[in-house]
Figure 1 (tube, helix red, strand yellow):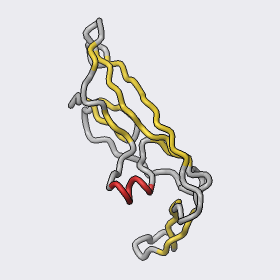
Figure 2 (cartoon, rainbow, N blue to C red):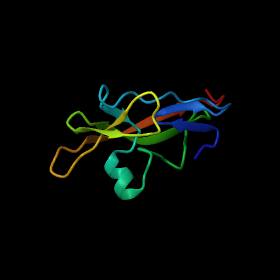
Figure 3 (tube, rainbow, N blue to C red):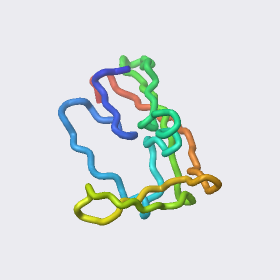
Figure 4 (cartoon, one colour):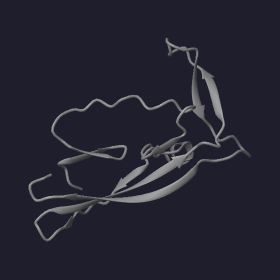
Length: 123
């Protein structure tokens, strides 16, 4: 893996300094995500990211390289939203999660491969 690059979800950023991440969208309003592990992947496989870097960069003719990242796109539109009371949340009484209960719809998952070409000067 190229140590001069860092991925957050499916964004590729030059690793120059710390970048603050913004809060994810509300699960009730936006049931689609990319690069985030679904509940099943988190619960059953202890996997908390939904993307995988190819460990080898492919060189290009101009001295650059091609990086590849496999990521999952999730559509949880059909997954039931549950509301859980949390004493840790000061601004609201409950937190919402999309949770596939037994016998109900699971997320629709598609795997995609993205190629990122980096020029020899790093751009």
